[in-house]
Length: 263
Ligand SMILES: Nc1ncnc2c1ncn2[C@@H]1O[C@H](COP(=O)(O)OP(=O)(O)OP(=O)(O)O)[C@@H](O)[C@H]1O
Ligand SMILES: [Mg+2]
Image (cartoon, rainbow, N blue to C red; front, side):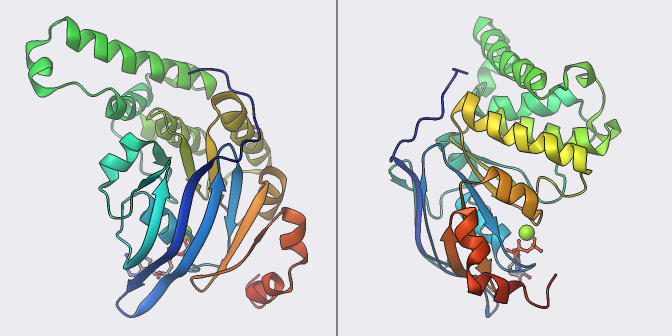
């Protein structure tokens, strides 16, 4: 992965418009619109059930919108399969852990890296030089990421045996192993102590600065959101309430209203 410095481009990486998702009469997301610039760090906040994870699910193809458009890197992606969207360059972590708990740390990352460097079934059977070169590519990506995340010493342990904070970092390593242009983090600070949360802030920054990856963070931890995000979008009951800088969002009257009686 090449070094990348946080250039302020005006290039638009992701754009949604009129994005709507209904579950049996309940509108989980209504008319969602966002324009995300390349290399930006965007925060998405809102009370429980306001549609934050639904937004991620729609963009990553885990769920199909009832209406609306999603354009990523100049291409329409609404309704595409998740595997295709991963190939196009969007990776995510989940709100709850979804590691392969019976695989080792390095295997978890290798499986993800192979989504981008797949081995054709015939090559896997024949095990010729092509098989080994593809495998080596994926292993190299995995090893570099484990090092970047400080997990090299844990490489051979089972994912399930890692301390909780390391498991959360492994989830991010696994998302990065697919070499995304856009990384979506769904409540990455949940369950972390204040020291680990502090480290997560620098980690998110260095993911953007070193790899040039655009990041969207969903979080309830306001300190983290206000520190790391350049812009923040606020959702409430499936609707966009406002988008702005941390300062603008902090002052916005409808934001206080949305959180009234909630925290
Ligand atoms: N698969 C589903 N089937 C039915 N309803 C769903 C489904 N997924 C989400 N919902 C509903 O859609 C609404 C938005 O849910 P979503 O998970 O997007 O909220 P959220 O903002 O991520 O909340 P939290 O902060 O608790 O994670 C909620 O009312 C939720 O119950
Ligand atoms: Mg959620």
